[in-house]
Amino acid sequence: MHIAFLGTGLIGAGMVQGMRKRGERVRVWNRTSEKARALESVGAEATATPIEAVRGASRVHIAVSDDAAVDAILAAIDTTLDAKTPIIDHTTASPAGTAVRYERLGARGVPFLHAPVFMSPQACRESSGIMLASGPRANFEALEPALRPMTGNLWWIGERPDLAASFKLFGNTMIFTITGGVADILTLARSLGISGEQALTLFQHHKAASTIDIRGAKMAQGNFTPSFELAMARKDIRLMLEAAAQGDAPLTVLPALAKRFDELIAQGHGGDDVGVIARDAVKK
Image 1: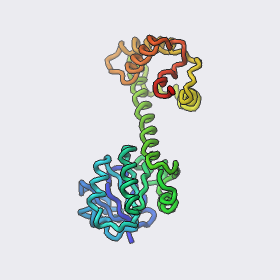
Image 2 (image 1 turned 90 degrees about the horizontal axis):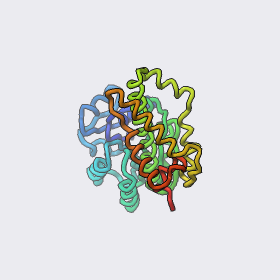
Image 3 (image 1 turned 60 degrees about the vertical axis):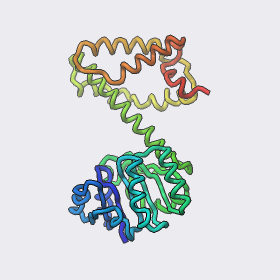
Image 4 (image 1 turned 45 degrees about the vertical axis):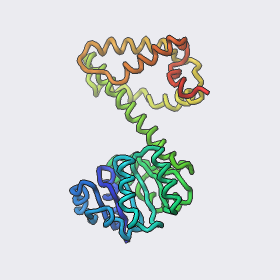
């Protein structure tokens, strides 16, 4: 028997390459057929349709762009796939859409698992990085032996079907926020005549990620006892905006933060901790 892999973009192709390294037989399909055929070089079998890929498969993996693409694939293979064949979806999908798929497939007895990843293409090839999963524990436990070799860290979050999808969005939110913050640091450094490489050496000493563990934990509890007052933080943003204005590159994150800070200061929160920007998200 073989494994079917539907969707061979950067992540899917990396996963297929990792499977082939482990000696697994894989049939692949991709909407852009050239991407599927490229994997023939590592011994995968490219097919013209998803139906051909899943016929007789021991399990099916999906890694595509969005909910609509997942649903289109499920509709295409619906009458071909044996109802007991497990389906594992690695797509970064919406929590709501994922919950609907669990309900729909579960009603038919199809073993379905949503397992999005924090893995680069290289990590997929090397079976490192993090794979999340949520949904019925029985589904996870049945598929765990197949999934564990694919990743360095397999984390089943819980029974709630949309948890993995939600946590994937949390993680990507942080990735994008950090990326925007780094862009602003590079903009500020350019304006001040400091190379980006030199500016980023700060973070070899200042471990900014500790903000999540310390201030983030207090924010989640709604604890805004000040250790860094919002009004003082707003003063610092003014300094940053003034320094950046000397250059010619746009800022990404700081202008939005300045606006939010001003709103909360006008509401009387200037003496609260800067974490009060989460006030509306955590208030009872």
